[in-house]
Structure formats: structure tokens, C-alpha cells
Image 1 (cartoon, rainbow, N blue to C red):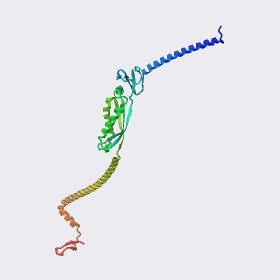
Image 2: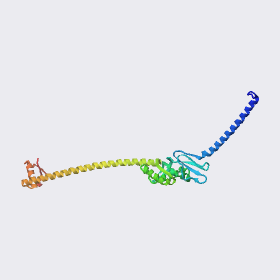
Image 3: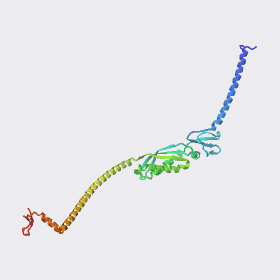
Image 4: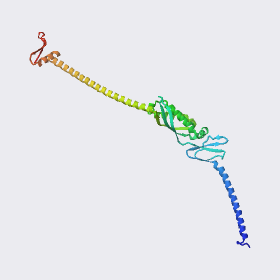
Length: 296
């Protein structure tokens, strides 16, 4: 009979434990190997496209597929196919400085910004033809070229008031130039512009001179208006007196006719009626020529 305390019993259990542990370890290793193989096969087949992106699928045998993968989970052939994510959200390209020359040969440094996004239906084609560096490859050169071109069509002195129309012209040109690449232009903005210091000083001096000239013109216009008012007032007064004289003449004619006199006879009659009866007592001039008799 075997006893638990016997050395042979402990030896048996010890040997049995070693064999069981070895078998367990061997099975765990197999399972881990299978899991690793499965992971190596399955994980590369899973593609998760994040929001605001499209997946361009590249196949080793045929290149980039024309069909983009949308947002969410999709699958590819492991190792034979790979996915590249293309951002289709609104993006902003800001150029630090655009150096341009205006129509009147003034140097202008403009700071511009372009809002755009990749057409989701053209993401794969864009990746195939340009790659993911499309901003540096096509957007930056287009913005620089067209901004310089449009700025060169206006004078520096007119830049401020033409800033918005100028931005819309650049935007329209960018729409045409970038559309074939699947890039949709949303908005173009000229954020700021810096002019040469000599030009700024010249503009300030011109503004001061224009303001002074305008002030002088206002003073001249005010003086001319004042003179015009004086002339009009004098003319109106003369017209008034003429009308009054005509009225008096007509009244004299009517009264003279009523009395049976002519107008001249009536005036002489009025003059005689106004005489006080005193004869002249003062003689001016040569007495031999009778001179001029004056009343006292």
C-alpha cells in the first residue's frame, strides 16, 4: 500500500506535475502562435476611415483604385492592399508673404489665406496624380502666381478700396485652376498688405495736400456763393425798383388822362403845385450869362 508520506509517492506527483506543466506550456505556445498569425493576417485587412477623410486603396498589382472608401470600417487584402487617408475637411492655406508689384510699380507684400477642401469623389485620383503633398505641390504655386498677377493689375493707391474685388478675382481664377485636381475653393482672403515706407510717406503727403486743396476750394466756393447772393440780391432790388417805377409811370399816365393832360403836362403841373412861390436869390456863375439862380 502506498502512503502519502513515502518518498516514492512524492516522486510520482512531482513527475506528474512536470509533465502536465510542460503540456500546458506547449499548448499555450501553440495558441499564442496561432493568435499572432491570425493577428498578422486579420489586422492588416482592417481599414478604419476616420471622419472627414476618404481612404485611397493601393493594390500592388493594379495601383490606386478609382473608388474611395468612405468613413467607417472596411476591409482590404492583407499586404496586397494598403490604405492612404486623404483629408476632405475644410483646410486653410496661409501664405506668409506674397511679394508683388502694383500697376504703378510699387512693391506690395500681401498676406493671403485660402479656404479649400478636397472633393470626396476625387480623393483617390488626387492621391494617385499628386500624392498627399498637394498643398505644397499645386495650391501654394497657384496662390502665389494668381495673387501676384491680379495685384499687378491695380495701382497701389487704389489697392485699399479694390481689396475685396481683387480677392474675388483671385478666388475665381483659383477655382478654374484647381478644379481639375479635385480641389474645391471655398474662400480667398487678402488678410493684410504692407507697402514700401517711401510710398506710405508719399501717400500721407498727398492726402495732406489734397485736404488742403479741398479746404481752399471750399473757401473759394463759399466766397463765390456769397458774391452770387449779393449780385442776385442787387438784381432783385433793381428789378423791384423797375417794377415800382413802371407802376408809378402807369399811375401818372392814368391820372393825367383823367385830368385831360399828357403825362409830361401832368408832371409839370405837379411841379408847379409843389413850388412855394419864392424866386431865386442866389446867382452862381457869370452874371452876363445869367448864371444859375438858386433859391434860398
